[in-house]
Image (tube, rainbow, N blue to C red; front, side, top):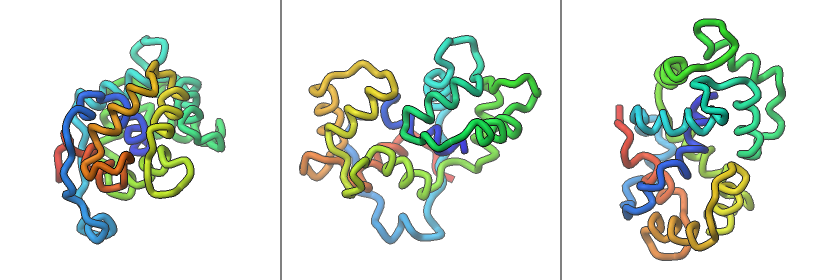
Length: 185
């Protein structure tokens, strides 16, 4: 639940990450291994994601705000009933909303971000399922999320993450970029 939300938004919210070149530290074997690392986002990263969900900036995420972001990410089949279940688990004080403290607690309960979660986030960007994220795919998703960016901005983002210089972001490059500031445990 919250891993999907965090990862899909993490990619575009931390623009500073796009400015650093990733290294190819994840092999395909390690990604599928049961010994694959688990990561915990920093508080600042969690706050950035929380703020994206909290579109009216009232300090809490409503079910409607949650569903709007998930819909923008292409998960249109998430029905109101499923959102209610998510809120039943995450809304610790029972007020019908998820505040930042509850958001952080859910991240902890989820056990961090797993390699499998990173692959799902990659797939959210890779709309044509060709194993590569293009400039156009970055642009499309950022626009759906309401981010103001130009095609040139997206080209800069892709270039900053593209370690092998092929003009696209592959899975290894994506995972490296996503986990750069996270704590491994």
